Length: 102
Image (cartoon, rainbow, N blue to C red; front, top):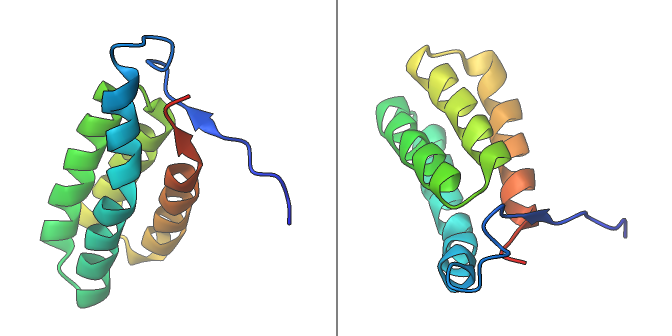
């Protein structure tokens, strides 16, 4: 099994913020499940809203790559660009699986 490099929050060095970042990272799986469920059901509007919320929250918690990927997915969902959605969602899943508080 290949080693997966962790994606560490830029806020991880702050001991006061580390628990907040850790809770955010732990909740990423549920956020992605909700987005994926909406995409699968064809509810692109709701999926775009959830991706938008994820982008903002990821940025606030020091995960710029996740924020960027979520913004890209949101853009594709709002534009109904189905050709790119699956790839963007895969990238987002990969990044979120790597997210760590430290």
